[in-house]
Length: 130
View (spheres, rainbow, N blue to C red):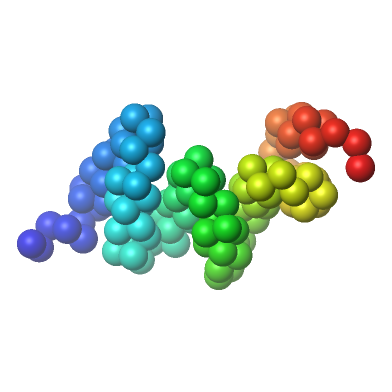
C-alpha cells in the first residue's frame, strides 16, 4: 500500500484515534497513534501525536508508559505540554509531589511567553498542600 505514509493517511489515523478515544476504546486509539508516531518524519506532528498518545495512555491506566514516552527525545517548544502531561500521569498514580514538580516546571517554561498558566495553577491547587 503506497498510500499508508501520505499526509492524508496520517490525518485519517489521527481522526480515527480521536473517535476511538471518545468511545473509550483506548487500545485502538493507542495503536493508531503509535502507527502515526512510527510512520511520520515530521517533528511537529510527532510532538502532537506524542502528547495525544500520552493522554490516551494516562486515560487507559498506563501512566508509566506515558512517562517513558514523554521522556524520550528533544522536547523543544513542547516541553511545557510534556511536563503538564507528566504531572497528569503522576497525579493519576497518586504521586502529588511529583505531579506538583512537573506542573511547576511547565509554568516556569511558559514564563515570558503568551502561554496561559491558569489551568496548571488549578491542577496544582487540586493536589492539595505540600
